[in-house]
Amino acid sequence: GAAGSPETFRERALAALSAARERTASLTSCVDDHELTAQHSPLMSPLVWDLAHVGNQEEQWLLRAVGGQEALRPEIDGLYDAFEHPRAERPSLPLLPPGEARRYAAEVRGRVLGLLEETSFDGSRFTATGFVFGMVAQHEQQHDETMLITHQLRRGPAVLTAPDPARPPVHGGPAEVLVPGGPFVMGTSDEPWALDNERPAHLVEVAPFFLDTAPVTNAAFLAFMEDGGYHEPRWWRPEGFAHLRERGVEAPSYWRREGGQWLRRRFGRTEPVPPDEPVLHVNWYEADAYARWAGRRLPTEAEWEKAARHDPATGRSRRYPWGDEDPAEERANLGQRHLRPAPAGSFPAGRSPLGVGQLIGDVWEWTSSDFLPYPGFVAFPYREYSEVFFGHGYKVLRGGSFAVDPVACRGTFRNWDLPVRRQIFSGFRTARSALPERAGRVGRADG
Ligand code: AVJ
Ligand code: FE
Image (cartoon, rainbow, N blue to C red; front, top):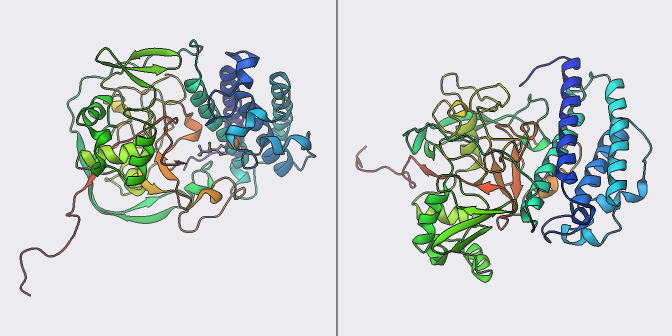
């Protein structure tokens, strides 16, 4: 894990909190008050809910739990409790209007900065690294990704702009690599700001498998579509097939066919679907069906993490595919620097030792695994962060998208969602087992 003195952690916490607030401000200052309070989709909260929810969680986790302070506005806690009110219902709540929501979040932040100054970073393994400050920064950045999803769902003229990622160098590397079998250390016990569900480190045995060196592209996904993939039940889990047929889905979200060409809407603009970009906005069933059509399967969560962290030279698990250093611009497409994934083959400096690319950034990658606790899991700071989601049909996504900040993305980071969800920045890559599926003794029957 990343080491540091109390002062470095204090500085890191300050930088992470400030960066998160800057992003929240930019995502909520580019639309007017009417758009902040409007519901752009029943799948999402109005942006003004996220704004005050971020402040309210910061107040609860830092000012009250760490600082022992009295509630600033106890009457609003219920409004911003994600469990009390489903997203579809939030626009009809008596939410703080935009100006008040901003003032409330700013007031909390002012006090948090005071608390950060006076907190001594020593004591338990969590307080020594300023864990709760780091967790609150990650929480805000996760909502900044959620708000970007809301922006993508919003109709109307574009309000966000960002430069396109650079074209990748032309590189004819292999389409898949063999990840050798054997044990590796999954999860972490010493990454300072790793969340409860990433802990603890534990040994996992993984059989040898082949993994795609890049996420599945739009061109590859189009081949599945053109082969009638959406209409062929044998590629699909029955419930996923029924779900998509009921809704008439025949393409990823935001795609539409016009004059023999596939177009897509992206943050208020319409453009031709770029063939070499990782496919985006597919749900778990679509990923699973594509993989079966291709004669492959989704990787398990353990396979994904082994490919991303295992260093075959030393046997150690590292923080990222490229090593232990924090993400840099040339290694991964993270942090809303671009408003799209980069073409497959981008970021050669971010590849793993075995040559697997774009594991971090670009698109969240569906895995075949259910969201479950690791052996020895302990809920922290409380059950509502992860524990209440275990075993309820959520699938794990790994690696982060272009929309997530580096502070909330690492080789051990686990995201989860329901298998029908496709408004998230989700894509996938495929795998295949290197051993025959049914291992048995073939041939020599003597003995
Ligand atoms: C980890 C992205 C599934 O957005 O529901 C935000 C993160 N938890 N507030 C979510 C989260 C509490 C969470 N995901
Ligand atoms: Fe939240």
